[in-house]
Image 1 (cartoon, rainbow, N blue to C red):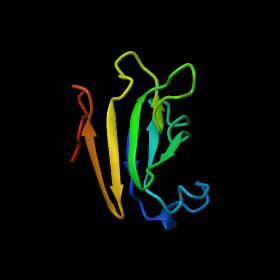
Image 2: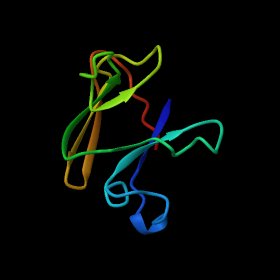
Image 3: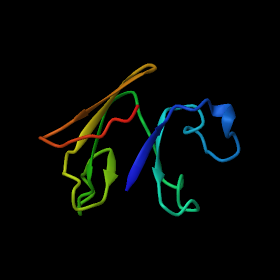
Image 4: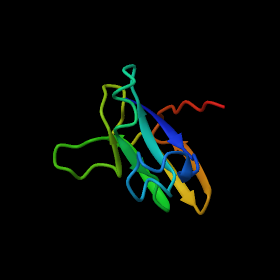
Length: 98
């Protein structure tokens, strides 16, 4: 699953998002089928949010992804106010696009 970080002002799409995704930075899925893009949203909470593979017992990361190349702890988003950083965890790689 590909995700994009959305920092779009909430007034840009007020009717398509539920709170708190209207006012908070969030991740949205990207799919090759446009009708499936944007259906999954994960709000980036204040503090650290781990990203990784979902676990069977439900004790996984704050943002769970599926896929053979996703590690149990793949990356960490850290949010402090309006500043968000992303770092790879455990030898994983994270693609940064300009």
